[in-house]
Each structure stands twice: as C-alpha cells, then as structure tokens.
Length: 186
Image (cartoon, rainbow, N blue to C red; front, side, top):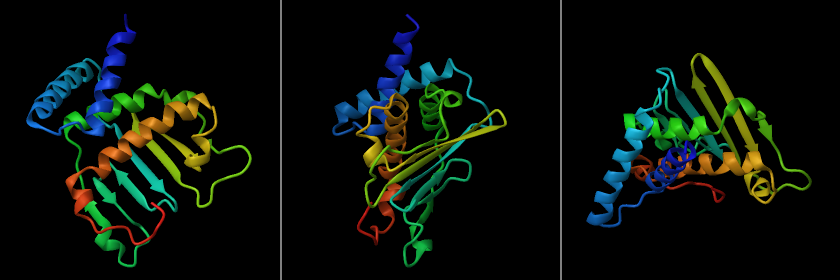
C-alpha cells in the first residue's frame, strides 16, 4: 500500500518534468497533476538546506546549481558569458525534484559509474550532486551512452532521474532564450 503513493508521485513527476501541456485541456490536467504532486510531496519534509547541482554534456558543457540558480548552456563557447542565465526553482519544482532525488537513496550508490569495456567517443558525462541536512553526495555517470546499454540496476535508476532534470531545465524559457550551441556534440 505504501508503494502506491510513491508510484503515483513518480508518474506525476515524470509527466510534469517531461511537459504535457499541448492544449488547454492538457494544461488543466497538468495543473491537477501538479496539485496532486505538491500535496503528496507536502507529506514529506523537505530539508531547508536541500539543493542540487547537475553537470552534463560531452565536455561537461552544461550545468545548473539550484542553490545559486545559475544555469549554463555552454561553458566552452567563444563567449561563455552569453550562455549563462538564472533560473530559480519554484517551491513545487523543488519539491518534485527533491522527491525524485530522495527516491534514489543516494547513500546506497557509488560515487562513480563507468562502463566496462569500450567507451563511446565523444563520451557524455552527467554528475548529480545533492545537498541536504548538512551533507553532500555526488554521483557521476561517465559515458552515459555506453552505460545505458549495460544492465546495471543503479544506472537504470539514476540515469532517468538525471535525464528528467536535464529535460526539465532544457524546456525552460530562459534556457531556450540562450544562443544555440557552438559545438556539434550536445
């Protein structure tokens, strides 16, 4: 019975972070899902100091830090200052992401996951750092393309959460307002 609320919350978060407002009707449905997710998340105590940062890309080009709100689309652009903006999470977004990160049970995970055998070139890396209750934990996925083809239960759990967060950030208006990438691999 305890699994049902967690399953519903997970489904709700996935739908919200993926974006599902193609029409007025789906916008109303999205609002209902957000209300449900907020109510479910409010049953959990979110640590006041909860924040996260995520770095991703072929050369760790992109990053976001919820503590500062700094969102960077391309660290290595000719004019990197043109690729920096700010995005502050709403309380709802923060609660939803907290629930997804908390569900990973970070203490049970290794700090770094790398593929066995050959690696993709260029290799995309994702590093997710969570900070809560005075603690900090970073999980790094090296060469996500190769890792996604391996049958590692930890990676199968971590990668979708990271991708949901990245997709959510890439769908914000402030991200879309930044210039296009200068490099081919993104």
